[in-house]
Amino acid sequence: MSTQPFALPIAYLNGKFVPVEEAQISPFDRGFIFGDGVYEVIPYYGGKGLRAREHLERLQRSLDMLDIANPYTLDQWQAHLSELVAKNGGGDQAVYMQVTRGVAKRDFAPPKGLTPTVFMMSNPLSQPSKALYEKGLSCVTLDDFRWGRCNVKSTALLGAVLLKHEAVQMGADDCVLFRDGFLTESSASNVVAVKNGVILCPPRDNLILPGITYDLMIELAGKRGVPLEQRKVSRKEVLSADELWLTSSTKEVIAITTLDGKPVGSAEHAGKPGPLFWKMLGFFQDYKQELRALAAAAE
Ligand code: PDD
Image 1 (cartoon, rainbow, N blue to C red):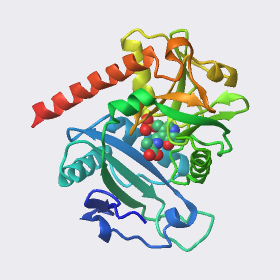
Image 2 (cartoon, rainbow, N blue to C red; image 1 turned 60 degrees about the horizontal axis):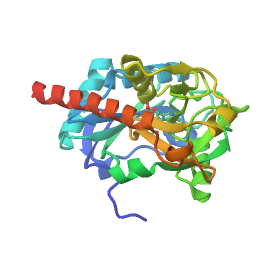
Image 3 (tube, protein in one colour; image 1 turned 90 degrees about the horizontal axis):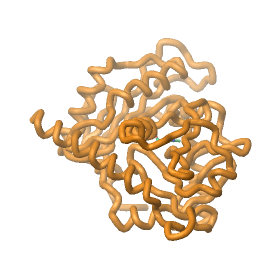
């Protein structure tokens, strides 16, 4: 087993900040027994949350879909999150937060009136190296066999775990998933394709997680005049794409340069991140720079 610490030193559990190694929950927690819970991963830059409000609004939608009462208001969440980040030294962190239905006798029917369990931890968030950006990721195409409510950010992640496991066993970094011949997403990121200068994004339906980074990318493309279509993207379009990207809160945007062992794109860009990728990465860096400047000005 790795000797690396599991997370930064301070965690949050049910109203208390505790040393991470002391955070303990009951084995009867429905999160442990059934995966009956939801989560978020929120990036903090210079101690300031990137789209924290949007993450908390998505948390609310996930809780609503599972009929779990939100234990905190938006302001309370923001305060607990900021305190956790500050207690762990500020700077750039990825906060993981999880809410489960709570502790109860094992029964599939959720009992009413349980007290949700709230757990938060944080990890350092480091930007991928220039070498990694230039290399990009290798992915394999796999059949998306997950359930029909991928828009819920549920802690029941066995489908994603098995898909990622299969991709890694095949020697790849990750997977690109298809359902009924159309692109959905990756194990823990959204996927978009680029063809003839147009970004092609799968629709925001129940078959993908509506990514906060995906939304930010759409917003940045709109502001900077990059054409974008939100519609079903076929397997054929993905296999003949000029560029493929993954987006997520921890990866931001990164190019997929190899798919099923073949280079993505053609001519001088074959197997390398394409020109629109570098442009979009620049838009993200500018956006983060503004966020950091805001955080510094508020101090
Ligand atoms: N994963 N799709 C899936 C299935 C995801 O799990 C994630 C996030 C995304 C991207 O969403 P966002 O841009 O809001 O991070 C898309 C997180 C990072 C995780 O599980 O660690």
